[in-house]
Length: 324
Image (cartoon, rainbow, N blue to C red):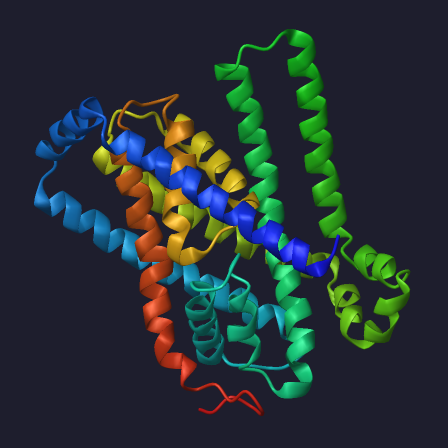
């Protein structure tokens, strides 16, 4: 497939996803029953409750990105020493770049331009290790939650359930095995001829030991837990009758599906809301409330930090070390 054809196909898929997502949301919003349910819920919520929840969600957002900054600093420890504040600046700057680039790819550039020029490619590889760690947590917990979903809501016979269980457990095992032996990736990449010239950069994959991988996964899991608590606080405020375990399982599925879809942060809310309302519909009929909760957490976790990060964009020096 030619490069131009691939680009057109990629854009077409992304546009289709966005159009379908916003059509799905529009359909839910014009449903009179949904609107009536939402108005009834809002009448029961007091302003002090809303303020307390929003303050908690914003504080958790700051904790979330602080942990990501510590993880970024840890990933770089054998590449280039940076202090905690510089790590925070680079993470928030990356968020600013991420909101207007497909699949958040700009986040990589926003961070590595805080490094000295000769270390930027190594920084990209290190950031990839951290991203894979977050992906492992999302995929393992998401696939297990998906198994719970099929068992409880999709009528499958025992043979299909057994087969699905084996497949998901095998998938989770392989994901964890691969990540705890991420140095294998370096060996695999070195078997590709045109990548051998980048050996001095890709060797970073082999630098992370077992203890390092555990530390990275702990950072990733902590952030995953914070995301979940944020959603729990907002959803519980709006729809207090949802069971905690059911909510957690659906949220894990939501993260899993969301991570696999092509997106652009500025338009991402449509995709997020449509995915969430589809799965939450199995445990609640308050679809507009779920959309509102998803929009709220999206705004706090991505848009507000991206606005903060715009301040640090002016500290970048594209042709040398970032200015202080």
